[in-house]
Image (tube, rainbow, N blue to C red):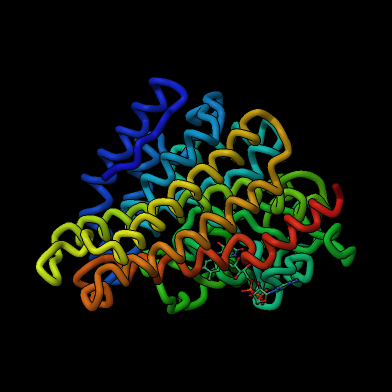
Length: 381
Ligand SMILES: Cc1cc2nc3c(=O)[nH]c(=O)nc-3n(C[C@H](O)[C@H](O)[C@H](O)COP(=O)(O)OP(=O)(O)OC[C@H]3O[C@@H](n4cnc5c(N)ncnc54)[C@H](O)[C@@H]3O)c2cc1C
């Protein structure tokens, strides 16, 4: 059962219908095989881009959809309900465009943003390093000014779309001044000296490539720096506030997908002479799952509406990321329980949903780091 949504405009209701149609025709038929065979489908992102679904929260002036986050996130949720890895990829792509849109000069935006927003160029976001995940200010990758260029050396770990992207939004150290010594660069995939290491062998999201990007004397023209020198970490962290909302919506989509499978199964499977949904002990588990999905959706929509109205939303973005991913972990785990032994096999997608959800409690700031953001903001008053 698709979620009932109260969309703010007829245009946004049409967008949801369009997304559901694309999800049914283009995503669901490919997802299972792609996850089993670890196949990244670049053309899926091109199709989403051409349908206008990769650019929704950006202004029409640059080829974006001009939609509020309230709408973008619900579209993202529908994509993730069909195929989590594509939902994550869509969110990461939006995050990769964020720095250019918010910190780029008008000329930089005109030059690159339209192709990025149309999906002709797929993005990746390089913040983490092997020893600098939760604490990105500990990063060591360095960009040294050399005439009109910067020369980048180092390694950016865990890059979603690593080796598949067309551009990399890279945070690198330009001075030793801690978090104030980091700058942001838009590095094209064909830059000499840039290559992807062997992809990570992961628990889930098999159709999404995750790899360390290796920078060996990568020369980048200074006009590819976004913002001023030293502004890189604030650009990265501001992007993460919005990115976390994306992951909250993705997790909610996967949870909705798991709930739908569980309810369908519980109506058909019989024990003790009746469908298992008629056993109260099991039915209450489904009721709790429904409550978890509905409250997760309300939580990310609240944060999105704060953002759309121009209010501070960082604390609520962290609340949403934490609540939605924790709820999704519980819902997908309980979906396996509802299906009994069948849930533990690959005959049903719920075991995959459970594996896919785990990482959502980890990336874009672990849920411990979300608690840090929330509690620090409470302490500030
Ligand atoms: C599949 C996947 C895709 C990813 N994609 C990207 C990407 O595209 N771009 C990118 O830049 N990064 C990406 N990441 C990296 C991800 O953001 C980091 O893994 C994450 O931020 C955690 O960092 P870490 O793995 O170094 O863990 P650590 O920082 O080593 O943390 C280990 C544990 O300690 C806890 N911890 C750490 N510090 C504190 C503290 N102060 N208080 C309490 N607990 C703490 C953490 O919560 C965690 O449980 C991806 C990761 C994965 C697994």
